Every structure is written in C-alpha cells, then in structure tokens.
Length: 129
Image 1 (cartoon, rainbow, N blue to C red):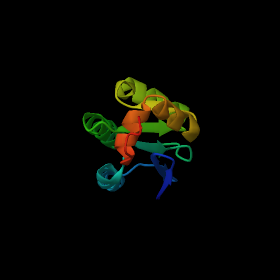
Image 2: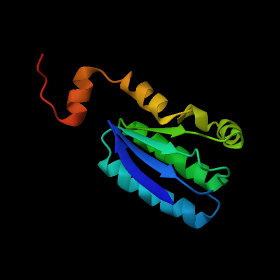
Image 3: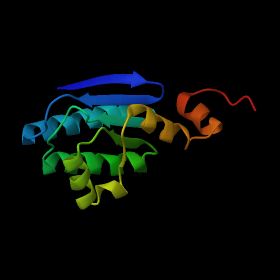
C-alpha cells in the first residue's frame, strides 16, 4: 500500500509493504508518473516500513528519478533498510537518487538547494525584490 501526503514543498509517498511483484512495479511507476505531473519539485519515497524491494522496483525508482531531474524536480529516498542501501549502491542508483534517514533530512536538503527566487517561481509567488 502507498499513502500520499504533502509536507511543505514535498510530496511524500509512504510505502507500507514489501515490494516484490512486477505488478507493484507497474503501480509504483504509474503513481510516480502521476505525482510527477502534479509535484512542484520534491518527491520523497519513504521506505522505512519496507524490508525487501525487488530489482524491477529499483529500476522504476532510478529511471523516474533521472526523469524528474531533467524536469528540475527531485526524488529522494528515506528510511532504507541496510539491504536496500547495498542494492541501490550496487546498481549505482546512488548517483541518481539521494538517500536520507528521515523525511525532515530529505526536505531540509532540498530546501537548502533552492534559492528564494527559485522557490517563488516554483510556487508561483511574485518576486518582491
């Protein structure tokens, strides 16, 4: 199951079960596509309740992360189990998607990379400077 919520400028996908089947890979891919159309800039995938993720799902996450980057958006992973950290590093996925221990850490890392002018543009505010 995947729960979606917004926190500050982030859309958070909290995954609450192990990701093992090709069907789940399709579901996640479609959900990331949809969220990517709506998201302003940052999507966090919280995997803290997940112990096992199959290779196809890592492929989906890494491919979407690369696509998001081209669109000036970002995907960050949170709460990876030790096995998942090793897998993403082995796949060289850590070159494309950053990992963090907490959602707050991921949000803070993104906030620190966006200037106030860029934030105004992202959120549709007029520049008052």
